[in-house]
Image (tube, rainbow, N blue to C red):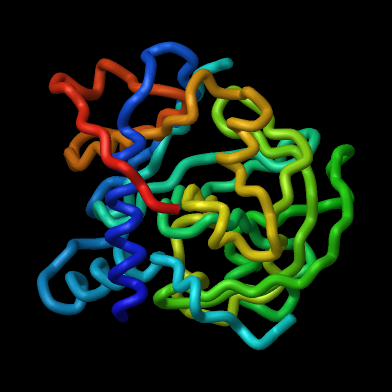
Length: 260
């Protein structure tokens, strides 16, 4: 519990620390919003506990492991009950689309694999089909991840990843072949795209965000989130890579030193 709390604090500091940069070279990914009453009324008690579990459950536990082997871009986000904000990315050529959580508490990127046969969660979500991509490259190294309320395992693969209006070339990611947790069975997203420090990435993988910077796909090594919590509005917000979007802020920003 202490480790999860520490990483959550780190994620918050990381988010605020990255809110600095130029207004040019932005990559936008929209966060699409789900109506609050789409899954029925939200009531106190069990629903509140369920939302808290979702909100805090996706903090990555770096110490826990399974025993099994110059442009600007914005991504739109969806908002599920103010607890899950997720957007769309593409994997492969042509791109196979997935909704993902953009998580600052982890650094790995994973989506369900078409070779996931024994987990119900894989059948309820979009799955990556390597045979359908012209840019797929085999890796095969086994990887396992554990989050606060669930775990996944699978193997590394390499392909192009489309984020907003840019394409990250030769990105390593995890094809999840096991999703045993009920948490991932009923989630509103397909996978998770980690935006944390590369030191906590499994298998020595260079995270998507680092490759966006290394491949000069963004104007500045900065990203920020804008969350829209107004229930009556369709847009859940957006994540902006490469700088500051002036339409989402009025005051000056403060900078904080981070320790990797």
